[in-house]
Amino acid sequence: MGDHREFPALAPGHCLPKTSSMSVTDSVTAVHDFRVTGYSLLDGMGVGRFVSSSTFTVGGLDWAVRFYPDGSTANCLGNASAFLYYCSRDKDVRARFTLNLMENDGRLSQVTNSYMKHTFSPASDNWGFIKFIEKSKIQGSPFLENDCLTIRCLLTVTKESRTQDVETNSIVVPPSNLHQDFGNMLHDGEGADVTFTVCGQLFHAHRHPA
View 1: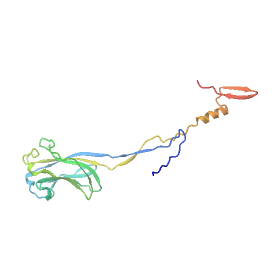
View 2 (view 1 turned 90 degrees about the horizontal axis):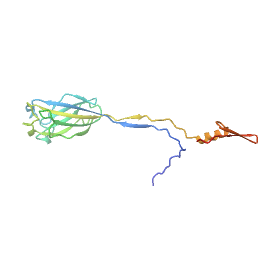
View 3 (view 1 turned 30 degrees about the vertical axis):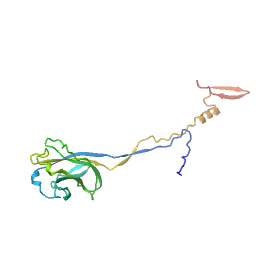
View 4 (view 1 turned 180 degrees about the horizontal axis):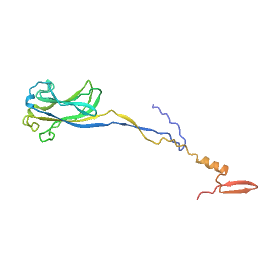
C-alpha cells in the first residue's frame, strides 16, 4: 500500500508563502560555408586524409569542417566523407548540425543530409557523415563549379541549462479575523451608532448595514 500522509490542515483563508523557479536552456545557431578548391587534385589523396576549413566560433566554442575526398575509413569506399570537428575540447557540449553540398547557383542540394545530434567531448571530438556523397556523383554535377565544392554547415550549439527564480508575491496574507473584530466592536462599543439606557445601564448598538 502507498504512503497516504495527510498535509496539515490550514485555517480558513490562510495562505502559505510561495516561491517559483524555472529551468532555462538557450541555444545559438550559425552557418559556415567551406569552399574546397581544386577538387580534382584532391581525388586520390588517400583514405583518412582530409582538408579542413578555418576555425569558426559558434556558442563561444571553436569548430571546423573536415572533408575527406576518399572517405574517412576503408568502409566507405567510393564515397567522400564530411565531419564536424570540435576544436575547443575543454568541456562537453551538445550540438545539432548538418553538412550539405551547395549547388553552383548557391542553393542547397536536393539530396540533403539529415540533422545529427551529438555530444562533443575530448573523447569524441568529431562526428559526421561517413558516406557524405558518392564520388561518382560529384563529377558533372551542379555541386562542382570550376573544380570547386562548397560545403555548408548549419550548426546549433546548446548552452548549459541554468535555473532562475521567478518573481512571485511572497507576502504572507494573515488569516481573516473579521469575526473577532466585530465581536470587539460590540464589546467595546467602538463605532456604535446608538446607545440605549435600560434601568440606568448603557447598551451600545450598531446599525445593520443597508
